[in-house]
Length: 173
Image 1: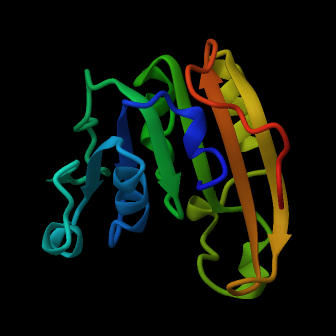
Image 2 (image 1 turned 90 degrees about the vertical axis):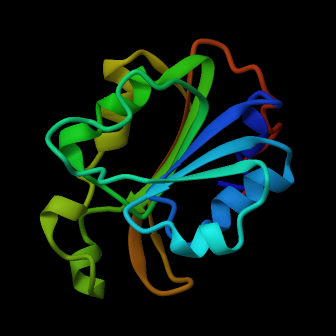
């Protein structure tokens, strides 16, 4: 996420979806982005919120998508997957908006949790999502990571149209 955050236009509004404790929200706020931090439990982020962070307690797994009609310059998702609403994300990007998504992939079940196929991306699933919405892929990985613990991960950074932020000249591992 840190590698590609500068791709998002600044100033800009970013959605940190399933934000957890808010470490990405705080990082982005420190870069002067405005952040909507969404999760079922936002108590940790509310306790340490920056003025640029707006915590929103939402159930992201309801039948009706709770963020319908919202638009963002960037969307960040890490370690979360709920397929029924996955296709909502590209539609919520403004022109030039950037999707940064990273979560566990098939093959992770040999390393422990998550092991349920409902929570593991299929091979190329994020690439297919980007393709369905004509997002330009800036970077994609489907890899094994040994730190902080062994895991299979899939990552993508994709943009709707032409990016308005700074594109890194080279990608680092």
